[in-house]
Structures are given as structure tokens and as C-alpha cells.
Image 1: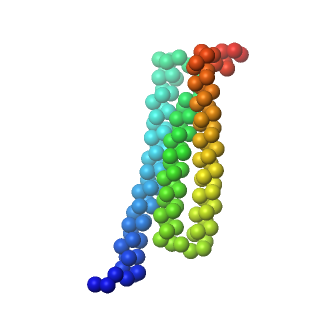
Image 2: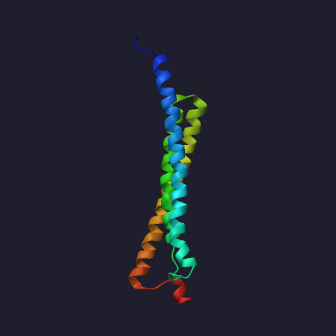
Image 3: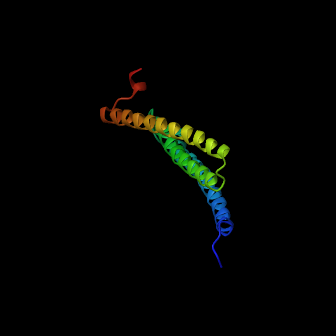
Length: 132
């Protein structure tokens, strides 16, 4: 049996579609995991079991999960475009990749800056709201 382009497409197209669906599903599960992670941390504070120390921990945690979800989404877009490389799809992928890349870069910078601020406040034992 000769290996043809049609035979390759017959095998690769369903595989690419399944991979795209898997990556999109992982992205959704990642966002849900982030939500559960911040809920687990926030509930004891809301119930008064832990001090209400000002913190950006929930925001940092959720931001990290969102950054990971963006990576899964970008992977899904790449796979989807690989099997359908029309000029329109390629332009769409480029725009989406650019937007997601910038979002990831700025989100990463913000998370790192917040983390450094939190570490500095932990080290000093001072918090902005304590001084107000």
C-alpha cells in the first residue's frame, strides 16, 4: 500500500482534531484548577480561621494558572491551524499568538513584581494597610 497525502490526512486530521480538543479541555481544567486553588486559600480567611493579612496571593496564584491556560490555548490554535493552513487561518493564528504572547509576558511581569513586593513585605513584616 502506497503512502499518499490523502492517507496521511486521513490519519492526521482526526489526531489533530483530538489533540486540539484535548488542549482546549486542559485549558478549561487549568482555569478551574486555579479557581479551586484560590478558593482553598481564601475560604479559611473569609471564615476568620486565618488572619486577614493583606495579600495578593489569590491574584498571583490565579494569574499563574491563567498563564498556563493561555499556553494550552496557544498550543490548540497551532495544532488546529496546522491541519487547515489557509491564509485566513494563518493570519488568525498570528494575531491570536501575538495577543496571547503579550498577555503572557505582561501577566508574568506583573506576577513577578507582585511576588517580589509580597516577599519584601514578609521580610519587613510590614504591610501597606498596616501603615494606613
